[in-house]
Length: 53
Image 1 (tube, helix red, strand yellow):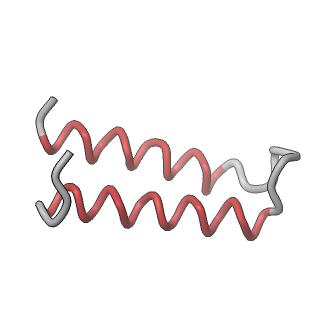
Image 2 (cartoon, one colour; image 1 turned 90 degrees about the vertical axis):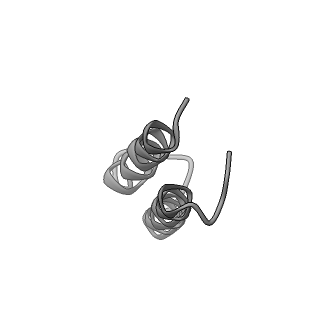
């Protein structure tokens, strides 16, 4: 899988965490938003080539 597709899929996971902050019971909304933003930042680092998968 190429770098763009990997970062896109990581971004989708981060978006799901962020948007699902208030609809899931196993994390607080703050934890869910923080997890989503950290995941999105990880996807950005993969996209820019700083982290290789």
